[in-house]
Amino acid sequence: MGPLQIWLHRDGDDWQSMVHRDPATGGEGLRMNLEGEAPQDGQWRRLGSVTETPKLRFRPMMPNRPVVVRPEMPYTILPGERIQFFVGLPMWLAVETPSEIRLLEEAVTKLSNTWFGAPMEGELAYAMRTWARREADELDFEPWRVVCPVRLKNMTKDKLTFERICIRAQYLDIYQDSKKGLWSNESGVTVRGGNNWSRISYARGAPKELKAPELLVKSAEEVKGGFSLRALTGAGGIFQ
Image (cartoon, rainbow, N blue to C red; front, side):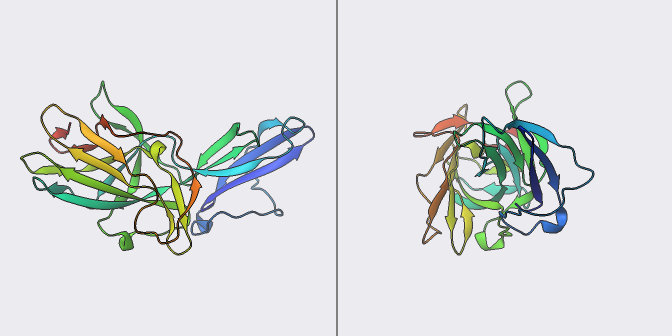
């Protein structure tokens, strides 16, 4: 999938795997190859027993941590204003048993680690180099990226300037559309100011931009209603 290659090899009673990334295949989607030589510089590792697990399956998935992205430049939302961004999140690929025991999970592209939030109350996340965009047509629709609509609302009495957005990918479904590729359900962030944290919510169902969506992967965690968490950071510190 994209630059990610996962090689599987049956060695006696063991399944073995090798993970390799080839930038030359970065524009391709999920594909299977039953022939070919594995990279000579790779390292094999044991996945499990062939006897206990005679079959393996691949499952696309969202990143296993929150993902922090940036708009093209620090963005200001006026009091009472609503805006929408579109973010292309990189997929992961998991190798599982038929009973859904996960043996291996790998990101299509390597993501950097970052810390989001206050030093004592923050969380470990991934940092993405790609930008959040105001228009979906401006995104690069690589087959291994999921377009995530993010809706922001400023309910404070002041201008709200932010530099980073934290997206909790574990709450996002993946939908497939024959023309527009892979999308997630919409996430919403409402900032009320004062001592309140940002109100996070997730729309149910596919985004309105898709005409014929098909649910491909359910979210890792299901959320009912909204909850309060930090979602934005700016030059002046953490927005609550």
